[in-house]
Image (cartoon, rainbow, N blue to C red; front, side, top):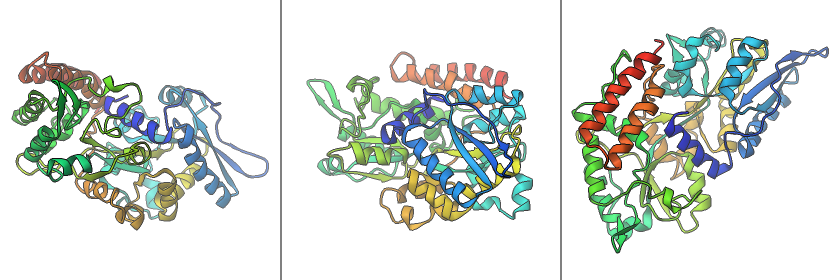
Length: 425
């Protein structure tokens, strides 16, 4: 799993006890019984409150569709089981899908293209966030419907900024100045970091803010060892040398401790999955959210992520499965039921623009950020390239073990090899 995604899911687990499950239910496949009812199996890897959120949706669908009944089944190690099930006749009919996986799995011919079904039912792709649709698309074919969208934004501690006499930063310069001013040390020991710099997976977002890109347009080579890449590491280096952050600071606070929620970090670039977390666990936390600061030339950028619903090609009940995912994701009222149940921004644009989100001071800045947020490159080799090459070398840089040029050069050398070995495009 991608490192940034791992952190994201860990944060979500704290918020709603939604975790990659360690329990396992039976696999099971769809069937048509003697009473004419089609029974679908829906796989996902959310348990705890996340499982209950899914069951809210399946129960609502089952109630309105007596001839199609859906059962949610929690699966651990879902991808491995899915690939095995796809060849053994045990595939589920619907899967909860991290869109990030599409570029790697669509070429394996295990997902059902949905373009003809959309056309048949007159559902335009424009009903969903364009970037989310793009992330579910491979070789011109759409392989799922967007269920949720999220984007990184800047969360800030209002009391800390007020005490320092500063406004939420809108540019890199303001971010750097604010981070330095907000940092506190006692006897040389860092007791409050001005800005969390723990997530090196955010490099791609900073790089876009600087006007750069991670890989070439054809996915054949890395492109981050560039003047823009050096600008990002220059910003990080200045803040690190100013004492804004030190490697391992947040981990040193104790297992399960959120540094922003407890006031040990003044600003953090994170996503809407943490809104509930901070409201619930930030006992004395008064926080605000603004879009990520713009780069040196005024470029705005954020990472868009999120989930979708897909139909395995091996599903025995594809038409009924389509009715289920269409009902959930494409119809505004049902997308809103999901949104209010799970507190996720839906991939359905009309639902996302509902006052439930647009009128809320916490959600509105996320919607503003979604206007310019972009997905990561849709290259089959990109996830392992970022996880195996970029992030480890940038971590060495933040730990002061290598310089910026060496970190970028080494990441480029390793990254080009990983791209070549993994790309299926």
